[in-house]
Image (tube, rainbow, N blue to C red):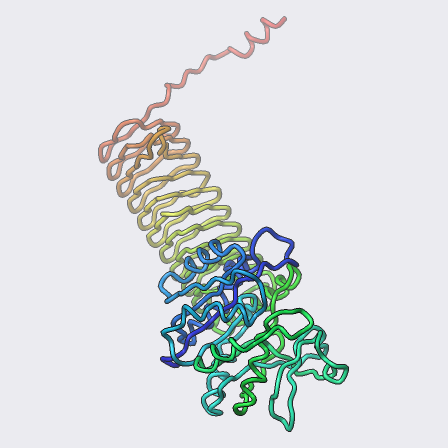
Length: 462
């Protein structure tokens, strides 16, 4: 929103109450690290540069953030010791020494913050010509939160719960820890903060009192849910439920039917077209794009896959980085692995697995087949029990089936091998060399019937 907006996101804490070897901000919530959500909000607001402050498991946190935002202008700052929030923000000063403007301060463990709240914060900051603006929230039980102290309606300071007097503890307006600060004030003020509190830490909240001496502090009130942090796994699960509800409601309002919204697991950054119907316990991971009038059956899992209009996915099918054309019918219990590309009107039935398979229009493999490293033309029929033997123990090889090919049941196609247009392969055949177009390939042993054999065998047993 502003060309002179930077953001500092605090991601340095260990998160002791998570009871984990993993840094708190790396714990996943709906498929993304916890810290990815406030970072994304800052980027949506136009913040650049973006400075994550890392500390515990700094290298791992930096790697995860770069993977989430590969094209963002990221500058990482290191907080060597955990000495409070003011010290954490001050750690970013070196990364912003060439920046002049407003600095947005967010926390890496607050995933539910809304873009609208930050937009309102910027607007309040601009209209009030404030040195510092902040987000507050009103709680029925404010225990543990810093209180917003006002005099004559104007914010004068923040007092942490442990430092409050009994009168101050009765205040229900609480600090959400989200600030927008002029950089010219920020670094000077941070240098003056001293650890004069019960914890001996450098409190970022001291900035509020210092800014209030210079002029009004602008405030924006947000719902307590939006500003709630994560301290343990119970709270993380609670935040995930709220986030999932928001996502699911957004899709339903856009014309998507969720047969059981409570069990549909849809990650952020999933696109779903109108009039699509999604069954219970379906999981759609980030990067998945679903077209219009698609049906996705119960228990199906789609990851980073594309499904075109009018396709039906029957229950318990699994897609991984697959591309599916229009009006296909997939499943039940089908698995499409990375590199699968289906043209329109392809049918893949129960217990069919594909990997790096390009399958043409109208082709079918309706039962119990494995098609790996395959190029399959249009109008092909693949019988039950067919497999492409694509791995020789050292290298992978490609099987090619031309247009209109018919593959009988229980066929093994030993790659590299090709079957020409219109060719037939008899049931039970092991194909080890190319089949010319229009040919019939049969390799099974001729059938022999021995009449009377059973009676003679029984007689031998006495």
